[in-house]
Image: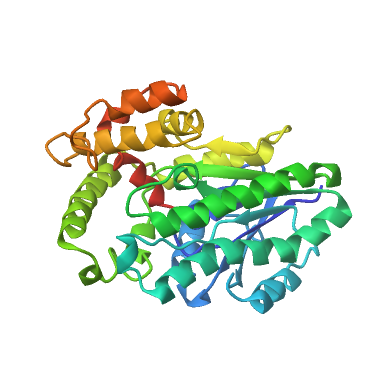
Length: 334
């Protein structure tokens, strides 16, 4: 029986690396994995881990693929010896953290180029053959930062919101072609992603005012704690990818954690955004903001309730009181 051919972008570390190993070493021996990297000089850790995991010969190959370069994507596609890709995993991504005004134009452009345009380039290269064969699965590494706005993650969230719209549009179009698209919505994950932020953490902070810099400093401290205490291991996340891949009735979204779903539900139940923003402001105080008062509207401690009443929004459920900084861990992506 032919093996399922899987091509994964962004495999130098993190989710991509762990997913490639998980599939290549699967006891069923039913996968042939092409792990792609922008720089093949970084493939050493992948092969060392493959050896320690006992990946069978021929189950794993590496290819050079830079999602920023359409020619590079096309060249990688041409090197797939089976002549087809059954499962495409769009995982390559970059992060950007800090006040919006502190980001240099090059850093903003780089993140959007990799996260959005890079995903489009990859899909454009592999989707036509899937449609011709009327068979294929596309898994995209998503984020809770693509479902709700997070402080100091404006550009990153913009890129992930774009991916949500891209995949949702394709999910409507592609089923008649036998092709299914799924987003794997990740929360914080213990990877090296945080160490590879575009422009470094915070960017050019001297471009922001003192008050914003102080808030960002508090945010960073809380983020570090969340990554220590609440982040998932990559192995947990790869099991969600595997479950999505094997699902006979593919869904559009698979959630790696339910921790942030109450906030997502609240946002969706509040189309105007008033209740959501007010709740996040209030939670900012609980997370170390201004003496527990509503940031941006300190004179009205009932802003959240009033906004929800006005809009008919459902009240938040779960641990919303733990602060808007907690969803910031969604930045930890592959």
